[in-house]
Length: 598
Image 1 (spheres, helix red, strand yellow):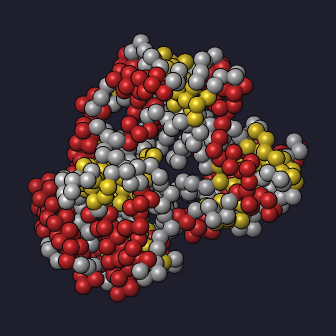
Image 2 (tube, helix red, strand yellow; image 1 turned 30 degrees about the vertical axis):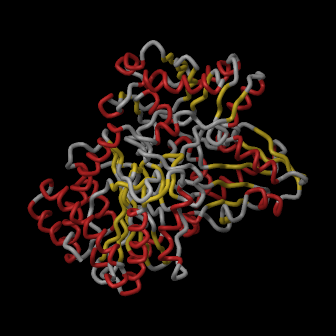
Image 3 (cartoon, one colour; image 1 turned 60 degrees about the horizontal axis):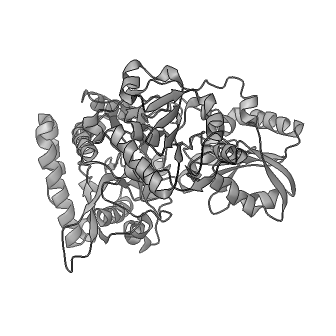
């Protein structure tokens, strides 16, 4: 199977590794070093070689960083990981820091009177370093780019991945890479740019209609590219990844060069060169500056077109969700039948769900390691079950299962919270409040030009009214057989990117009671034009892509408005209509009961 249950990090090794890092820093007269989670492509999901933060600290979350000082090592984590980090790091050696409430600059000013802090310019963006340098102005601390100190002491660091590239068919992409390159090249010319540097793996794969295997769970290729204003692409990646079929697909206008040739190539460009200061590594910017090549800061030209899916991509994603929904119904049928026997563990659940997806005969990979948290483990937002943490599911637990799959026609991501017996009135009340926020997003109709931050409060209002909330965004962008977390679109109070038709997002409000239970409900939705209404102002709405029943046993019906009940009954009727013919007889019987009107 794809998912394993070994413990990926060793917190007990952290203190010795931290001591070795401090010794290396002292030898070169550095007072500190920044260890980010990111790789050279600023990826959230990274290859084993790039798990520096995990190797040093034991923390396995997908976001965060550590700042190592002579007497203090702060692990900066956001609200998703504050429970998780305390169980994964040696708290005598590492200090969790609530971020972004406490900024890196303020923390350094408070704990380091003077000295040099090193950073690897390949692992940070210009935005990150500029923000930190600004915060440190007037303080006797300076930042210095340096070769990576963690790599220097990591004796058995894995090699860089060399996953095989493969072609994404035109029937699923909806647009040839020739047309994509031509369209974006015309945009470069209109803006006066001679070239654009592409650093994000999913942008590179989208642009060239290829996929790869360099990152677990995400079918992307590690590489860099330069898109020229005539539509040619200079691609910098390991030639071992490319078979003749992929080279034939790329054609003569895409030239492949080794990664080591990138910086010398950049130095010879005629500017202006477009660079995304929020996603490109600072090392690329420094190379252009050193060669006096003019830079124009602007968003990666692939990001918005990639986010606004083609009709073919949306159709493929819907097909993937119907297939995945049928597998989920088979799984939920199995779960309800298996629970009364007792002794069921979180790992049993994860294995079973993967088996039902595998039985579709279309599973390429998981889209992330399944989060399966029973009882208190459900309150760990990005919990990953291991042999060490595996919990037997108890009577009256809440079970949170957040999972997804990669099919060649689409990427899925779904969360369901399931009643094991009777979890009690408090859990049902909280679930219903989360459900109300989930329905509010699903039913939203909104003016063109609004961003994720404008809609995020809709998901929280029912919780806010009772003094409750959750410490993560309401939704993230999702790719089309690409990264399960895709930018720039988000449903988040931090997102200022206007939502546009074709953008796929998750809708996943939640509520977490540390030490007791976790609740999250998640569907994927896609932005579409809303039909005319009122004075015909341009408006958008969401179409739901995910078809899986919600657990009616957890709903306090009297808390729902008539409109909310109508939406839920209509959704369940759609689920039943879409999936009943695609599941087994036992699952069809279960589905009829699970989608009965309330």
